[in-house]
Image (cartoon, rainbow, N blue to C red; front, side, top):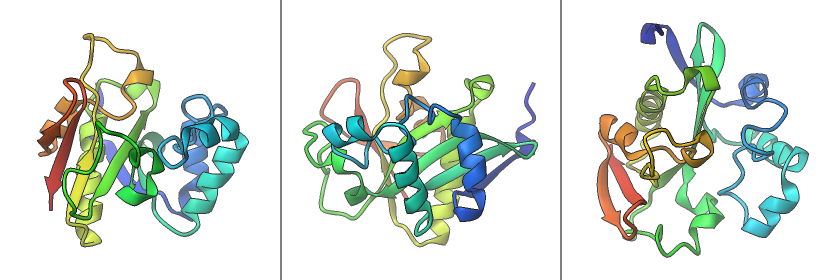
Length: 189
């Protein structure tokens, strides 16, 4: 049984890059992604899987905080990525995830949880940490694009954007649903 009091959350800054590498492993979380899937056009992402994506994320970390790392007993166990919506070029052409309005939002794009810590509520705890961080930076609106599970036990590869129940538990509300399985949710700070 995991003691949630032993969880800690820290922004991914240069000083924590080694922890990010350790969490993502040699494969870069999911097939060389290194959390770059939403930041690149599809063709560019496919070309850059692996080391190029890793180096691109490392460069981002030198100038900004692209997400929060969860730690359990000082070991990195989870990740949640966020950034201003305009940094995620894959959202530009999506009809389903098109902007809801003209308000400036920060988008939560991705989760990665160490296999042994999945299904323990880490995603919700990460979201609470993201909210706390964003409050400190005076960010007003968080937006996300979770995937409705199509089965009770969906493969992790299909849950990387999060599932609606985790967002609901963290206080997010559905603001738009252009697809039955892909709501747009927001948290107003």
